[in-house]
Image 1 (tube, rainbow, N blue to C red):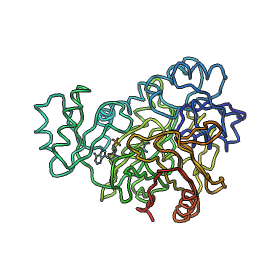
Image 2: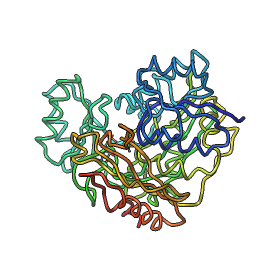
Image 3: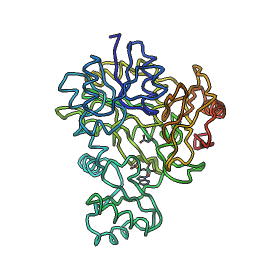
Image 4: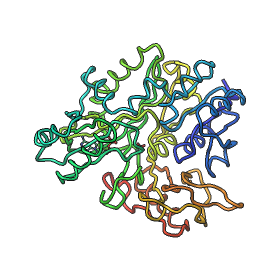
Length: 416
Ligand code: AMP
Ligand code: GLY
């Protein structure tokens, strides 16, 4: 297998990382990206489409061998189902399985049917049930989750009973129901599991940093930086996660008529006894997690994605570099609040084999690189030690000029 032509759907940091991985794959000849960003335009042909029907049409017109879907929304809207009807291999699950991310309640039911460890929860549909449910989980922060795709804004974790109550009431009003979940204490880790009907491959576990400020303070964000491998995911924890969570999920998802073909993001909370619990599932690569896990794959990335899209994963060998990777996100002024786009980005460092810039919210305007989102770019480094990867990533992020931008100074602190 060689000379593949691949269409990558999406235009953020995740899709730039996917394009970078594909560009280093011997199996891949051509890369297209829709809509892409300034970073993908250096590796792929960008096409300005975002509607599912346009993307399917584009895949057909370009006669690609594989479509890799980055974000969850087109998967929930059925892009994999449509591509399957046209016999175009797709990395990313069909809509009925993408519901795992689209509906947290659906994910909870699947976990309960398969005895997968996760937090206890109540479903609230009427305001009269709120107080008794809050009483049931008192003594810890309350965790309230909307049952809709909310682009990272659907979860509130708070010690303020009144804030929890108000969020429950407003969610019942807009969505008809809401979930109140028991708080899980512990340390988080993310595991990206590539799977298909034939088998699964776990990528090295990583740790994201979701809060805006150092020391995990401030508002929740899409992720301010990440590193892998995460030492909290020790071999003992890994074995428990595989036996209790990943194998049962793979069994459940692979026996369907259209098995899960793509990557399952398993968000874990690991308690003080080293027991893992599922916090969330996503049906796509994590961002920024994939910016550091894809570069740790030492075998052909394109071959792995195509194998998973064609149910051949168990036939191929996937291996990893015994190295550490770390990435630091450069965010626009006021992120995670509303941001101004179109600010000039200057002094971008040159890539080397051990450090590079991942583009997220960037574009070229009048021949100049400008910001185009909240998380603008991130600086990634790979090295023999995590400390070296961190110092290289910080060395290059300091060079970049973007007015008002900010970044966390403590990425990787739990492991360093
Ligand atoms: P989610 O969108 O479900 O991943 O939730 C966003 C973040 O909220 C997670 O990354 C955790 O940091 C936190 N969180 C979610 N559920 C829980 C829980 N049951 N216990 C503690 N923290 C949680
Ligand atoms: N970094 C978290 C996510 O991709 O959902």
